[in-house]
Image (cartoon, rainbow, N blue to C red; front, side, top):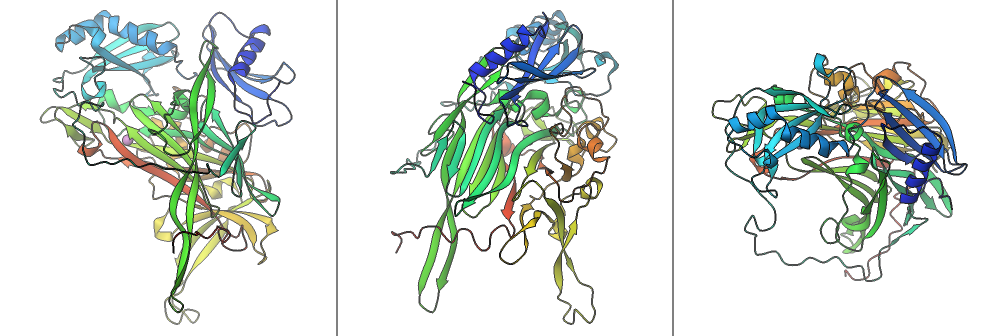
Length: 618
Ligand code: NI
């Protein structure tokens, strides 16, 4: 049986797609699979995207295959780009580095006699313009020391030493030993038993005696109060929401066609050679979908949980099934609204809650929770929970600490950013929408402003792509609205949703930096494009070692296409800048980055008036 077009990708379908492209003769001896994902663009049949990498020709084939018809629908061959590092290549690279004679010698100089105790972290090398990397597909490996296999490796960086692995030839082709720092003494383990636990924490149980208020049909179609949405796990973007809508009086109103975390970049500000190359594009270079955690009840999620399993395709074409990859549950969220009438001394109050759809992704040292929230009042929120271990470098007395923070004896953490690019394919009451930037401005003195108090919202229609590129400006209380000018509420106003951005910086590396040329999406907070099925990844489809030529949003928007009354996609870059603190070490307490959409004239009045009155709070 062929799955419905927006069903979660299954183990059987991955096997079917792999067999299909193999049968068609598209898989050579040195071909590996780099992305298998649901093609959400064609709802007539079940189609998958399959990206192949041919190591012999160094070409990538981007295929669309139809499981409905058993045909390869399209083949697009890409030259000069590199795929994500294959997870099958990672252990091979680690082994080669540990056994390399130059690494063994460099380790001995540091008093490490057993290189089996080296933790090897292969990083995408970025693109620093190094001649020796040109034409190669490279993992740059940095090293840490684990005396015991269960130690926290990041506590003891073996700084100054880097090894380059050519992943096509599978050889260590270069080792650089730049400097020797003393190995940090503290193990800084944080596993159970490593730290004395506080004793005053009593159990906290969440119970829903009648079960949760949501239902899941057709595998991944979630229905909750007025809302309904599909949840998918994409190989690259991780947790994706599809077809978000609100139903009232039997009428379903679409809001977003698709919402995802389309890219992110983590630039580091440290100038030391072992750190400066770190410009991780963790969505495109790593693929969040294949980093998804299997979640544990009572640990990752508390309460009455529904889990969805997910599958992704390993480089060798074998499906990997992750049980409990997507968590769906409800959270109490305080009060939805309240008023106390002081004349009658009575109060009306309603409880809020939110539907939480979440997954957690581990990328090397770091962990990202991607949490989507739907609220009772029509609010849609994307939240990223940042935790895990900060990247570390060695520190000795007298080292320059302008670009890194001393977080533990002999250990420093370089300053860095996490800039996320959310992609919202809007369809507020239908596909044709128009965007506005809204600034609040004080009026100048004059006859219309007799008390000098006047200030107002000024909405500027964003007619084309170049006009829409902008930054967050708290001094203007800047927001953006996406309106449907053909649909009106009972006041005759166009219906819409408003984006409330978080207080956020843009990319700090200079405009001349290579990472600014590769991750141009992060140099501004707002981009809007006409929706195109080919424009999904804001730094391009293949970002590994990508050239600093403005692929993705900077290049697309140069066409300055019209944005009026058409199908538009809003790209919002936002995030956090980390000057690390001692408290971020050895494992970082969760920090949050989020953006929020609220209805703006989409409803006729507060849509949460219909919440049931609690019967037990008087
Ligand atoms: Ni950080």
